[in-house]
Image (cartoon, rainbow over all chains, first blue to last red; front, side, top):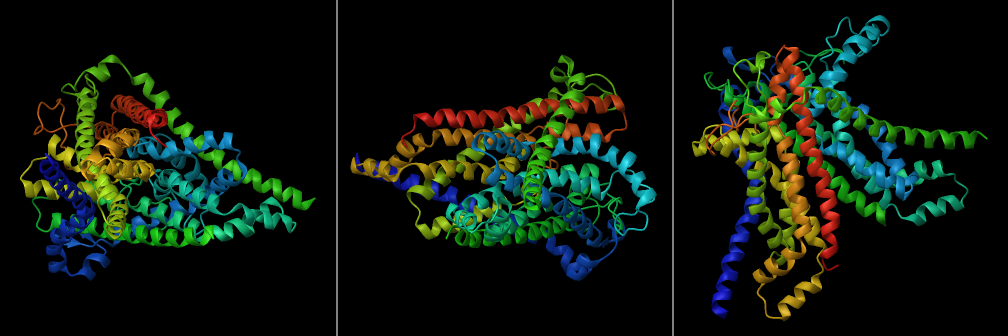
Length: 309
Length: 280
């Protein structure tokens, strides 16, 4: 009886270890698989030509990813610019001003944004954001902002970097707010009280004491939001226009890396190196996203130690 | 006086920012509900697409609704079978350095975009000799759900008091028995919450099933049939130039949002309610 129980224990323990190793090593397996599948492309064309090549034309054997990398940077960059001020202010409201009751209503509502599927954001973008840019903002920009770099435009269909960035900004907001709120709340109460006792007002205390102390954590929150935005596929794909050009204005279309992968998979089988190129794009995307992700984690770990002391 | 004005202005800014986000949430859901409810009909949810569906012909999206449910359920169960032993192993057996390494790897996995899971799933399919099918979709979505579910379950299992384990060992139970009969039972509310959370994310994701589940107008009859999903059905309908087809896409979007939000709300409520019956 005892031996049977010990044997069951031994077997279960090793089965559980196998599950644990599977979960833990999955990310390494993903990276390895992509490296192996992308290698033929890099071997044939050279890493430099793939990363910095301007032309994407699979049928003539040109696989330059540069337009797509630039597209990703534009959309993510603008989304970050739009999201950061609003998210930080909202997080300050939740952590510093809102009473427990109001917080209990607003926080779950913002968290709910995180649960909405990507494709629904895409539908919203197509229904609301794109027409607004095409009919209102675009014509206004054409009339008044012609000389301003990045904002000038002659004509826009609405399917643009700006549309992608607006949708993305909303999507990453709950990620940024959740962490920023947590970091702000981790700042000890005594710190605020010392500041008040020195005659500082609430705003001065928040900006000069609380935010300054929480700064590394707030940076981590933003970086994590960026890493989320970089990999987002469906919603962006639906509103960003998908034209592989180097954009000059936020009203121009762009073609980010995830959209490239999503749009072309399946039809790539007949052209040599095509599928290797798409998996190369996936590998590049993974590398960029993980770099930002790790950066955020290390900053956050440092921030938590600093904030609470 | 100036200081007072500044104070109030700053507070108003923070309130405005939070209000803006809540407003956007209401606007998104409102837009989908208003547009979707007009397209919603018994025909839409109960019938599969007929011949000219994507040209504005008759039929509905039953193929996508059933496909999404099969896919979500299958993937969630598969992810559960891997998640629960992982979390229990980390709690009961693993040395602390090992726990730290695995947790870091899982955090990294959590950040992998779903389109990369899709590309990996497709590569896996080729290796296993599978065609784009319900099964391939289930495997891919299960991998995508894995870090989400493990993190949710882990959060709850972490809260189970260590004294409980000591008591169980004191009564002569083995570590496996303790893991499954004591800790697992205590963690049950968390496991249910984690399953609902992962299910909601799984059925909402489009990029991971794009190349792996295939797409079909029929309801899958077996794991090797291709399966349609709601997100992709919405995406394809919106990609057509026809107003009538767009209208149905809004109906499909409403169905998806109802499914996802009700699982998300259920997860919250159940988590709170079931939590009452565990030892704190």
